[in-house]
Length: 337
Image (cartoon, rainbow, N blue to C red; front, side, top):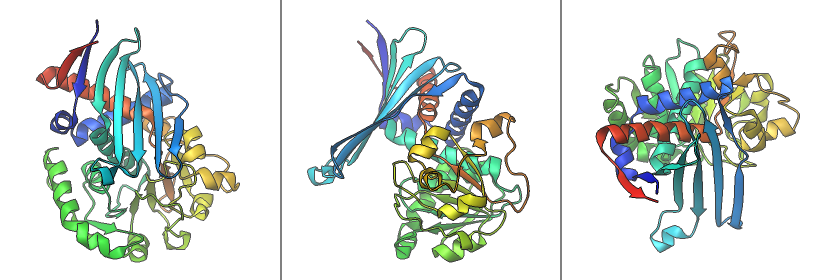
């Protein structure tokens, strides 16, 4: 029999912090760039088109001694059954023996690692003197993206919160987002120093140094003529074929990086621009910038874009870090298989 650790949402929320997630995601990108980690082909299946589907992302990380997968299932009718519409489950295995090591609730892991990824894009590609951050999207990911970026780049003085399709909703959710950002930073040993306010999309974009996007948009809302020279954009929302948050024209002249080139062109923010011939290739992957094998920003007035499609290595690295933390603290449940 094999002993497997089970970490539920409560366990993970008590263990996972922004610094831990950032370290894990950065390590995942580094290992990928060095060839000691790899992503495997994605699996997507629709049970009922537009109503129920699942996707599976998987890969291996030699440095963490693990391979693993994450299954995300979406059943649109679940809220009517008083169930969550989205379920996420991660599995971790020993890369040397194939033995199962852990089963984890992937929901909170996804929130933390997605925030970490968008923030790392800003850290390595934005201008160091950036002062104004705009968060486009007011859903679950917004406070994680804001908090992780402020953790890595504490020089920001102001944050604009924007809902691109329903501007009034930004004001409504602002108190909850603000409270969550404060807690995430406090749990990381930091205090919130930037002012966070709701703003209208065009005005926010035209004055921003860094823009984070996390929406389910299929029609681009961020227009090329609004983006000023020197801006950095981390795009998080496009995780399925056909999704697009920013106009393809932005990508024509920008310096564009991704977390996995093949996935970015298949289902990421770059998909349609690539198919249209506007973006034939990427400048590189973020892991290469972190490793120093590719240059990132090469001028103060260059527009940079990070297409953060979300890869399995982020989840595997975070899960491995959580497993170590759980063993050190005695948290989680053990079962014998």
